[in-house]
Structure formats: C-alpha cells, structure tokens
Amino acid sequence: MSKFLTSLVMENATDRDDGKWRLTQPLIYDSDVAKQVIVVPTGFVTDLASVPRVPIAYMLAGGTSNEAAVVHDYLYTEHTVDRATADAVLKEASAVTGVPAWRRAIMWAAVRAFGASHWDSKPISV
Image (cartoon, rainbow, N blue to C red; front, side, top):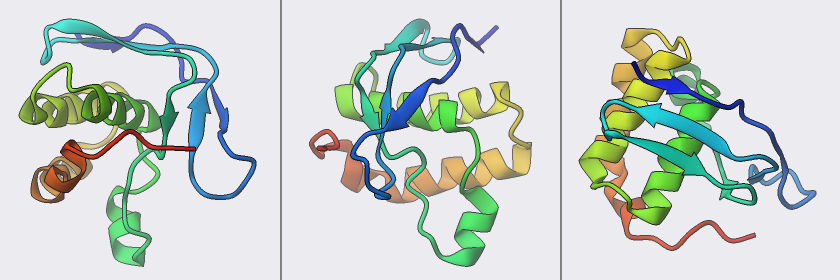
C-alpha cells in the first residue's frame, strides 16, 4: 500500500513571497504506481502545485496535497520515471493524503494536458 514514510518539512526558499519552498528534511514516499521508494532530498526546491491563480482553477485544484506536489515536482526534475508515471504518482499520492477523487481527477487531467512544457525544463532555481 502506498504511503508517505516521512512528513513534509520545508521553509521559504528565498525569504520572498515567490512561492518557492526548500525541504529541510527528506520527504520519503513509497509508491505502488512507480514500484519504488521515492526520496526527495533535503534542500530540494519546489513551487508546490503550479496552479494558475485564476480563482476557479485555484479553488478546484490549488492548495491541496503539498506532499504529493513535492513528489511530483521532484519526479519532473529528476526524471526517475516517465512522465505518465510521474503524473499517476501525483494522483496516487494525493489519494494517500485524502484528496477527494473528483479533485484528484482534475489535478491529473491538468498535469496531463499542460505538464509537457515543464517535463523537459530545468530544475527550479532560487
């Protein structure tokens, strides 16, 4: 059964209100979908869920499952799995953290539709 083995512990990465966060402890997730334990290391910088701040989009999919968003950002940065698997892990990890099925479906559809442009991008810089 998929599960987080550690809790998400992070701090503001830049001392600005720019939405970038740095892990201060590793985040470890055991994924059935990826068939591996994913270790997001201390120091990894994330912007959490990259949801447009358009009110309806943010209301539907923003601010949920930061843990899943961090794992997804890490997989998109490191490419330890293919993109489809990374997106499936987002959906799986969101379920683990209690995100309702309808919201997981919206988040998954959004990353499948719009995530390609971020798949080959460089890691988030500080």
